[in-house]
Image 1: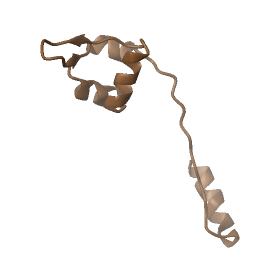
Image 2 (image 1 turned 90 degrees about the vertical axis):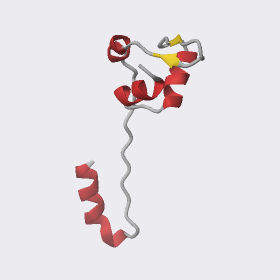
Image 3 (image 1 turned 60 degrees about the vertical axis):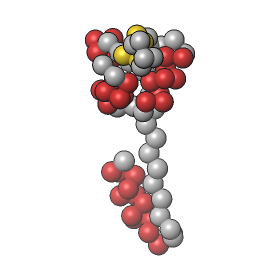
Length: 74
């Protein structure tokens, strides 16, 4: 599959796939035109440790209850 399709499958950007390949985490095959092609089974099996960061804020102390609701939702 193409790099764009592979990025969509993994839920990452094209640049991330290129970086993973440069770091040796995944491999691609190059076409005669130099385009990357990825194996779907290899991509699905690849697990990258990713962190999710949540951020909540309000603009004033009077909105403390809003901040607490945001934190619970996150």
